[in-house]
Length: 153
Ligand code: FES
Image (tube, rainbow, N blue to C red; front, side, top):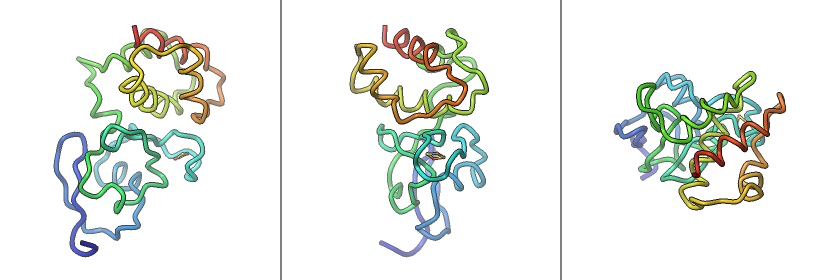
């Protein structure tokens, strides 16, 4: 249906939003649900800072509409793990100290998580390829790749 509230599940909780279906998902996550894991970077689908999972697949929340996410399961960085019990990819990024400014890390972690779901034992080259469209201006790619490789172990 194209009318009535939009239903979607975010981090395991079912929500209903009375918003236009062309609303971009990132605004709902950050403004309505106060989930600040996904970052607003370019707003054009190019940097990856806003990445979330939709049914386990990486998606850029700044260009994803509510209509696309409707009736599907959205997972944000907050839904991967908790401070007490981080997801293995989160734990690996913390252990590798893979952040400088940290703005790209949400996208790196979410993209890597989606990738590792499908490629549990990747080569470094495959990881590099998987993250090639996630931009990091600080140049911490070496630490990021190391973190993803150690999460895969
Ligand atoms: Fe979504 Fe850059 S903010 S890809």
